[in-house]
Image 1 (cartoon, rainbow, N blue to C red):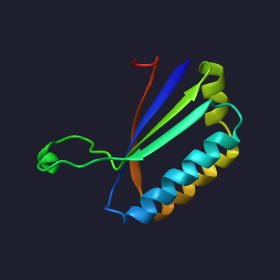
Image 2 (spheres, one colour):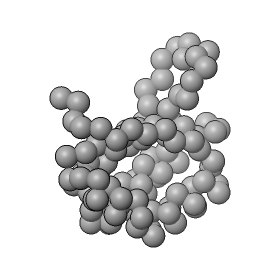
Image 3 (cartoon, rainbow, N blue to C red):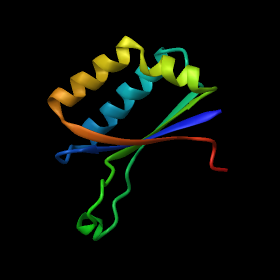
Length: 105
């Protein structure tokens, strides 16, 4: 089992409703690929002073669980995923950092 954990950081602040829609869109399109076991998505919980840290600060976290690297590659080559990413990037640019890893617990 592999977890693909993404840290998503929008360039500009978005209303909660927009962030929730983004997370819903990503979750739906990943599940529609048929190659993922689960998708978990949550908004980042900000803490005072974090904006002073010179790092990528998340807007949201998305974790996709797949069986193996083949399933991960299949999921990320699905055309629907790139349509969702391109649509959101064109309207609300964002950066993503990610890690592929075994379960942490």
